[in-house]
Image (cartoon, rainbow, N blue to C red):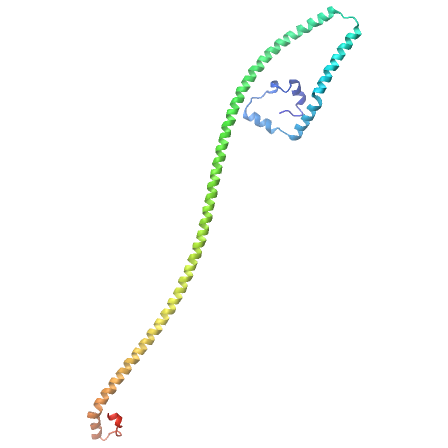
Length: 244
């Protein structure tokens, strides 16, 4: 991650492979991502555009060529021997630099291949993690669907329980009403039974009275009246209807 504090250090390395000093793994990538700051990134972009643009580089190159041309112009006469010695000195300086450059380039190639392998391994690990995350998301979604289904079932069950409770309450009220009606019917039956018994008893009394009167009528004239006359206790003469 290029920050404003590291810009001057990383710019001479052209922000290339030589700047990658940490192992390329998930933890390193996560640490660099965590360092991201939007305001600092805007500052870095502004500094790079202001100091590392094409126009500024071209201006520096043109200025350098101008200084060299002006220096040769001031000398008026060219010293070929001195130029040859300068060229030879430059080539002697450049040869080991190029050799070191070649070795360094080979090291960079080896390092790049190693990093490429690390990147491929990291990509594989990230793909595996991604698959695990997708599986976990699907598992969570499945659990959520199960929870939603269970919630719907519970809601339906609660609704059915409420309906059943209302039905039971209604049945209980109906049973209470029937119990009251049954108690009233029992009271009525008991009252009717009492009335029937009293009526039956009265009927039996009346029947017994009629039977006694009838028996008295049968005994009165043949037996009791002669006895009354004999004892002079005869009652008043019976009415014609009574004789009959």
